[in-house]
Image 1: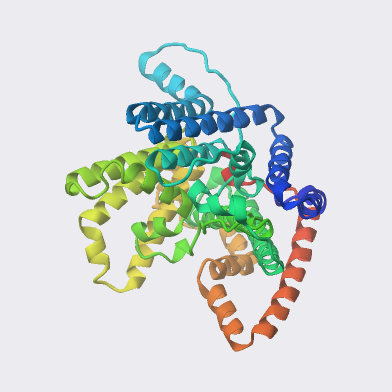
Image 2: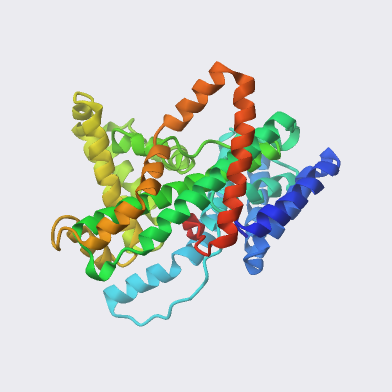
Length: 465
């Protein structure tokens, strides 16, 4: 089940909200656990068991880590955190990377090992990182161990962010799991945020994605290749940030405040700045649980560059078991190393416009690599962008002219202007702003429903991670 579906909007969500708010407060985590399992099982009933076993495994590891730490048995505590990490990453590796590694081994050695052919459970990368953040934080003493399995399982399986994030660390919702207080104001904020995310997905991401699919890859021109890269950039941004907005909005409806996951990344002035604004929860996770423990920037520039390389190799692999994701991670890793060595100092001394151009140029190249698992297709596309084919064709002109409004709207909503306009209206008249927002949100929801009823193109790109 996806958020941008008639079944979710008209059946599942209303029933869940009704059940949640009529039940006693002490049972609400149990309700969330139950409906989250139903939500997940709607598309993949077989893999609910894997998620529950992962949840139970890390719940027990957390208890044993805490038990050993309170008795001063740090070696035993270390054993259980290692087991938690190895077990969780082992399951992730089995389903996500086993066939990739077997294929690579066969290619290098000429062996004929059979692939396992295991389907990838939806959202496994997200909930694995969440359970790991919990056990690591318990080991560090950053959070108190959760002794109530229902509460812990509700945290892991919470359906608003289960499938595609944001990656919610336990320490961020530890208090709310036990003491949250829902309110009409928070609920209205959640509805507004959810509808904005739905509009990003249904009106912008889906339209940009459908247009991207129309690019003629057999007769690709330089203009068409650049247009395709831009359209994919729009699609993946509005798709993923739209999902994050919907997840955050749903969180508000149930009394949770999830972390922000995007902050106008296409307005960045460097790649470093871009990755502070794009998929913030993933960047935070890697910084807190890998980069800093490896030494971060505390052990000299050489060690720092090695740490950056490790983080970005794993960031690429986190996105998918394919060589294009490895190359995508390496691309950003190299760019960040160059920036740390000297380029950031240069960018600070020149007008911000040039930083914007440099960043968008590098990001567009990265999206071509990201979008094509077949590297030969990616390299061919990049070659066409830089002049290996003809420069322009009538199809590209036609697509630009007939979809100019869509492209301009996408550009507008990639900037901070909508937020600034909203803030200005609010500061001028709060009551008028709230009335206008209610009308706008209602109209937007009606438009989204009309699109959902009539459209068939409705994928979520980050579901495969």
